[in-house]
Amino acid sequence: STKSTVNTTTTNNNDKNKPSSTNQRQQPQLPTSPSPIKTPLPSQMSTLQKSFLARLTSSRFRELNEELYTQSSHHSFEQFTSQPELFEQYHVGFRKQVKEWPVNPVDVICRKIVSGWKKVREEGGAGGSGGGNDES
Image (tube, rainbow, N blue to C red):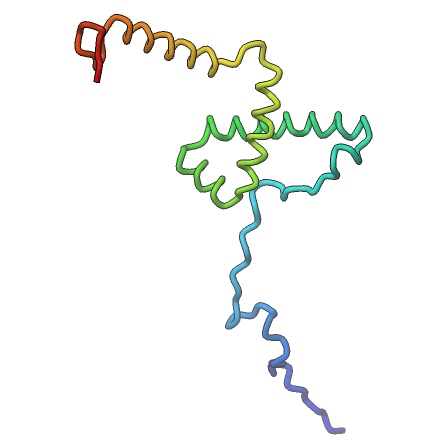
């Protein structure tokens, strides 16, 4: 009897996309956060859907806010640059949070700065001529 041998080391040229020891492709890096989900317009949502969306928006804001406070600014910049949708997710949640605050601290700070500036101007300090009658 005659034995036939089959050459199993041949390479099929149609398999160019399959990884091999000589044809390795770098895998794309997966995003660290979920992809943005297209949501229907609020007018198309049920009351329950609107409620869930509001809760998810708040949760996402808290998650992103914690990441911003616990990571280096360089890492946060890289993350928001590589995933621009995070900027919108953060600010949608931030605007929602601000509406729930009894007082917006930014408004308090602005009022103090403006009233302090007016007081300094009235007293003729900080850039005035000293007499309070700067007629330039």
